[in-house]
Amino acid sequence: MNPYLANVICCSALIFGGGSMGGFIVFLISGSFQVVDLRFGEPGILFFDIGLSLFFFIQHSGMMRKSFQEKAKRFIPPVYYQGIYAIASGFTLILMLVFWQPSDVLIYAANDTARWIIRLLFFTVGMGFMWGAGALGGFDPFGVKNIKNHLRGHSLRVSPFVVKGPYRLVRHPLYSCMIAMIWLCTDLTADRLLFNVLWTVWIVIGAFLEERDLADVFGDDYRKYREKVPMLLPVGFWKMR
Image (tube, rainbow, N blue to C red; front, top):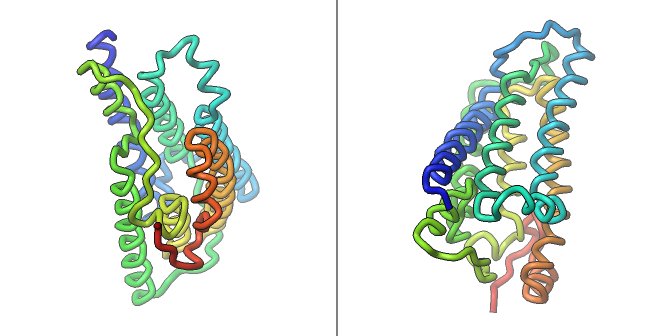
């Protein structure tokens, strides 16, 4: 492994991955940045925003699929893949945030008291997201740990299947929290409603697709877990035995 290339990929993954995630959280709280005004009419705004979302969905989900990763191995060493994936996803998400077109159609606006309640719930759910990420142990969203461990001579390995924290309540707590954060908005415009619906549907579809990959990796352990724990909604409490 070339240490210089490894460090470039790590830094780029942190910049694009971390920067896009930070911008995405601000977008969820405050709405469109309106960096670029393309001066579309109302129908054009919504169609363009649909295109931006689909562009991100295809890139993000496509590169995550095992079939794509198998083909990519011919060009990208496996140790670099997650870092390059973070760079590509971060760049695509930044493009979406920059070019997202806001609508002038206001569906509702929360009053002062409701705004404070929604904000409080948003950050509470955000803490739940962090709890879920921490429960994963070696959570490495940008692939930096993998690259650094490889530089130290440690080989890549699949983490053991362990269920703890919010994963005792739902199988995908990060997705559950993200959906809640998406809908906890104080001002709902036409473009934001479109965003909420599209991203909720995409996250749910992504959860179903990810289930197949997890079952392939962890086998019967995951299949038994799937039978006992709900996917996204904590409809009941289950204690691991």
